[in-house]
Image (cartoon, rainbow, N blue to C red; front, side):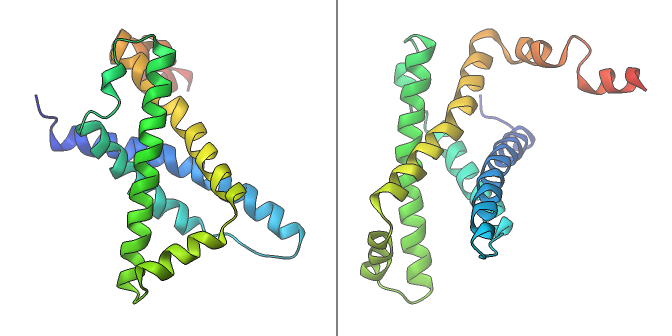
Length: 171
């Protein structure tokens, strides 16, 4: 059964919001370190745009059922497999996005890859590890929700009444 547009947009909003919080936190940390050495750096717009783009990539990967071959493995192995598959997908799509943006701005593919060459291997490794750290709780919760049921997971986090009713009754 295909998800409705409303379900699809809700999933997109949740994934993008989660990614924005993660990327925004990383940018806040980076900005605080750079500010100590006199560099003012706060591109929160970048976090929003990146969250929206990567959020769509994740939904596309889910629609293609990437990482689902490991579905019958223990939860730990399934989540690790899914994180690695999606991290690789996001890295490839991010490179493709950078190449496309470079071409739009009049840069050659070689120029775009030259920019990547200026980044140190340590920066690339750190980015990949951060991406895996961001994806791990996301895919863990998704796997648990798919295993025990989304309603049960919601009840475990928000109680029987749910968040809205809990907030109303606390007033």
